Length: 125
Image (cartoon, rainbow, N blue to C red; front, side):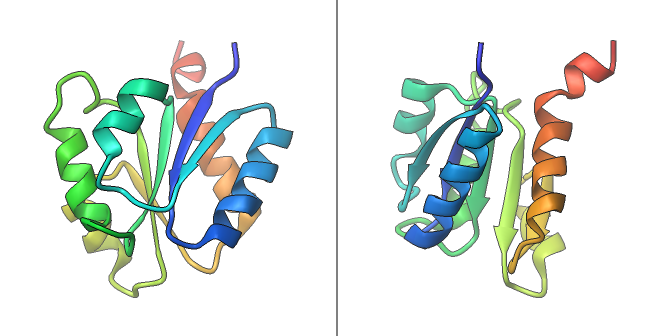
């Protein structure tokens, strides 16, 4: 069964690139340019991992992840936070993200980070 990644970013070109890259790597991918419907999207798709942009309409990455992390069913889904903001570490912590990566991306680093979270349970056994 394919691992599922849900990606939130307001930049359609980033979403398009991510969708291609992660689909080529064998993942099932869904994308969204807004975050206010995060709970509906997560309940419909139930991803194994979420990539969340900081600057995303309507409620922003931090607001969206606070909604997500307050739900018992979803709080353990790993989240990688993405932003060009220089204060990425504290923003990711505030959003309760599991990890973060700065924009512009090092795609190889992002792919390794995604693999780390998607296969961590297999590696820990």
